[in-house]
Image 1 (cartoon, rainbow, N blue to C red):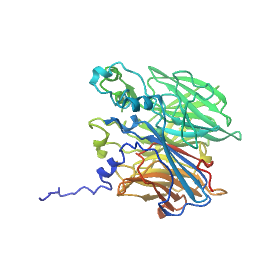
Image 2 (cartoon, rainbow, N blue to C red):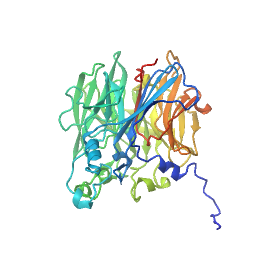
Image 3 (cartoon, rainbow, N blue to C red):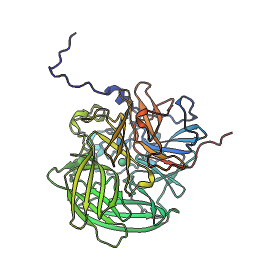
Image 4 (cartoon, rainbow, N blue to C red):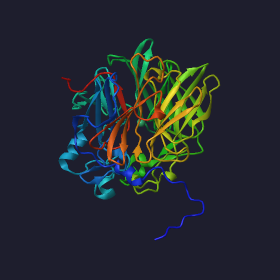
Length: 494
Ligand code: CO
């Protein structure tokens, strides 16, 4: 058999779609063990616990989900002490997970298009949400919380990952209420750390409620704001004085969802002629919100924001349109070339003139930004972010990119062709004096072994590659977000 190529052969892809797809197999096993297969050395002064969350089940009793975002939340933890690491993973025992595992069939529709068996008739007008607890996991005020933005957090035991039940943040979240999957930890609000979070009630006009919790988990400030139109707000950014949201120019036409043909998120459409609205809400709860128009774009995640010379600077991962899977049968047949890449943009907002201007910081396809936790909301220099192997085009994340925002220099370590990147986290080295003196930690997928690796890189030398690669004996399906905490939650060492 001969193959004829066009005269200008497209560049070879940095990845193999079978490898990529194989990271989306359900992981139904729950493990707990000391990791023993390690390349390199775990830094002896690295102590604490990495928590990761993401969809672990890509099917319910053989019925595949339409989109991974509909998969049940699987928590992984890796506890580090004295150069050793202990792995554990557990499903969040949500009411929906427990009921479906008992019934051995899907009982719920998913927001991202997963339907119950039986066609539209079986799904029409069933607007029950399954709280799948699959997006993020945070540790605040001695509580480990698995988050999903459309419902309440689930509280877990940090040592065993056992599910302790729904958590309403000391009565803060009313019955039927929700809490963002992207709260921010303000490292020092007048010297004290705070958890800043929000909930949003979308509709013809959308209501945003901001909450700030002190280190004991008590609410210290709470205020609500209405914005015209539908607001899809996954993430936000904070500075010492402001909470900043990007209201993407999207509208919601719920009819196919109500009638049982589509998931709610599949009913979102992008309006390229309308501006993105930057909502700037003073955190004091007293001053009015300001709304500033900027270029039409779609944002899931913000990297950081800060105040400088009377301006607000916001760094965000922007898509030129809503990256929907329109035209694909399901996510496994996605054509990466047809989707827009996320790029890192910087927005400078002048509050006095209510104007914004945007510039591109990183044009390579990037997603999942991370930085030094003490720089959240403050001027910062270094950003670590998942990136595509190639400098142009859209592709799965296979590389780690470090941006020096002072010089514009970018460093890249790529795990292509067989490695696939997750969200990096930056862990400062104890007694570090420089912002990038620490470790970058990623839970990656190895398409060669069909297993996952916990990879640790030196934040000052990422191009040198991992200083330690901890090879898990199984895979963890591609995840979403996680946290590193300085407390060690592994077994007691002998
Ligand atoms: Co997110």
